Image (cartoon, rainbow, N blue to C red; front, side):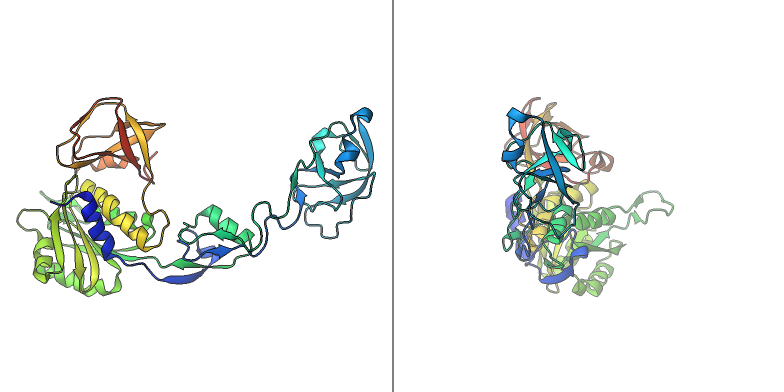
Length: 400
């Protein structure tokens, strides 16, 4: 029996780092940066105002002995003005947020501290020297690394790249992942069910999980428990993929089509992993393409993907932080766990507390859909009381 870490290492070793490609900035959202990006311009690019108000010399407007101070307004500086003239002594310039600060000014007096006049303004109070002035380059200087390789390109990162003048980015290619479910009992959703049949859900679940991880998923039509048909379906498609994920057909019973088919090739190894759910696992290659075989119960397939496949995919994509966020939490109620198995229980995490959602059964899909975390119980722990501290893996995209 393998440990969780041993099987993680096996799956991770299957997937090599993916290549790079250039994409327009507008298409970079959700990708992983392949190379460091330097700022082409400083941010801010010039000294500018952080407030609507009046650019002034602090020494001239901070004299409490003659408060309020009245000074003529020599210029109006809206955002975007490029012909800004120096601030003459004894004057102020009315200035808008983001507008260039005139040379000679060292403070911006917010309009709320004045009477708002446009000819001679009355300044009733003065903020400290340097207030409301954004200095050139204080956010990032030109030439500095704005984004590091391995960064996930979310909205903020795309916005920063645009702000420093970037138009294209080198990113990691998305992995192409085939998803195939097996089982003679499976029926496409929407068709009538006969006795003993169930609707096929794993391929949709796993394809969505692949997309959530950053890959490109393609579902193959599920196949019945027939070795020849299964192998024909796989070999007709696998050459186009970076990874094949199967679900079902890997347990110890009869009619385990995935195990029977791949064992004949001699390139896929099957093992029992000391975890629950998701004990039966397999990994290897088919015609040189990595393949990971997951159990058929939906919760087992989901947990197995989270524990083994997702981090391996994200490492291949170059993510600097490929793993889910782990946080400590305190149990709201007691729980039990079998000895010798690492338990991954569905839970709801909220403000440092976590409660179990449903039981440990690997068929409880409705409970899985209401979970926003996995509660990790170590192999050596069998009982935990309410109030015990546990490790929680936060799952993105759970129902709120």
